[in-house]
Amino acid sequence: MDGIDGLFYAKAAALLGAAIAVGVGVMGPALGQGAIGTKACESIGKYPESSGKIQTTMLMAMALVETCAIYPTIIAGGLLWAAVYALG
Image 1 (cartoon, rainbow, N blue to C red):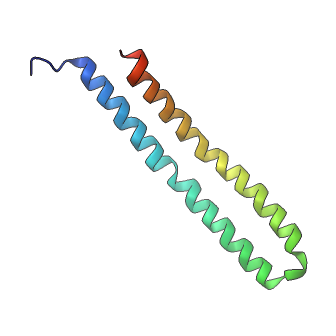
Image 2 (image 1 turned 90 degrees about the horizontal axis):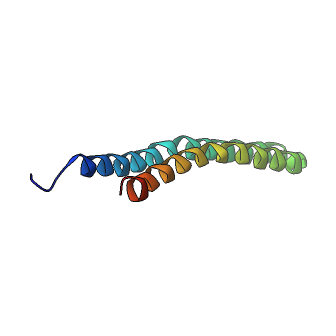
């Protein structure tokens, strides 16, 4: 293991951390968006006269949930930047 040093392990850890951050961090918001869509469709089926209000509320809730999916992506981007540029 002459050519492998601490820098190699640091890059590997950063890349693995980025993959885990995106993989795990996006599952929660994806499940949340699915639940929001399901309940909105059920509500529209029950009360079709208020579909406009339900749809507006659903879109606002999905926008809030989507922001939770952006944070792991930002963290993964920082880790990728560190692996490529900061660590050499």
